[in-house]
Length: 250
Image 1 (cartoon, helix red, strand yellow):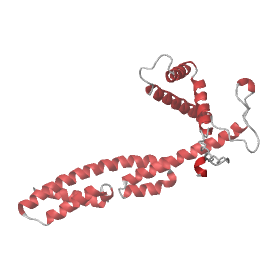
Image 2 (cartoon, one colour):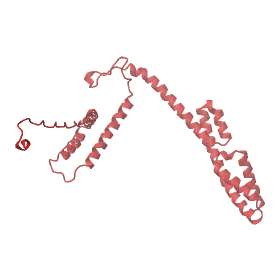
Image 3 (cartoon, one colour):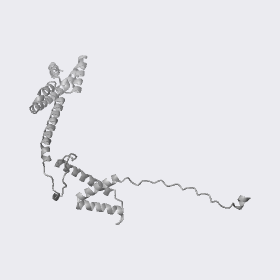
Image 4 (cartoon, helix red, strand yellow):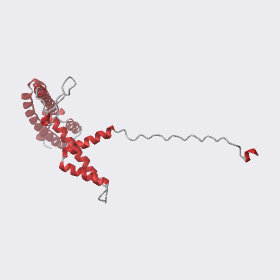
């Protein structure tokens, strides 16, 4: 290896040390540091071979570090604009080449900001929901209960999501039941008749099927099942009093 190549590797090592690149890739930096110490302990052809490996490793590490530092600079700029109160902490992480820590902190700050925005939105919607006019019975929806024990009004999105998951659960249960249908069942097989009825009900009125399945599930939860009553033990028959037999008289 030429002297110019050796100087280049040494210069790259010095620059990487000054930039605290160890925090960028601890394992990669440990390999380079171990290779440099090993090369310094040898002479001749072994030293030249180790120096060549060291130059390749340092050059590749420096390229990755420069690319990561450039990407982290963009992250730092956007994070400082979005979270000026945390600019000092973000810049400290960038200066010590802790790019992963920089991204983690930015993600945490973004999540906090998002949660704060949602909290503010909910705070704005709660008074409007509390003052919203109640549905009349003519609209087919029962009026929500009032008073201190009344549950909080839920958002329309939550209600729709719950209904969607309930419908998907019923569809999955019905599909599983159809797969477990008896093979070669006759036309009046009770199991197949029930499955055909449920499938027809799903095609005609899915909402009715959902309500019926929910109702049946509730009944099954409330049903304690058949209680096995222990059989009463028969009392031994009492000996009949009477005249002694001939054998007894003997």
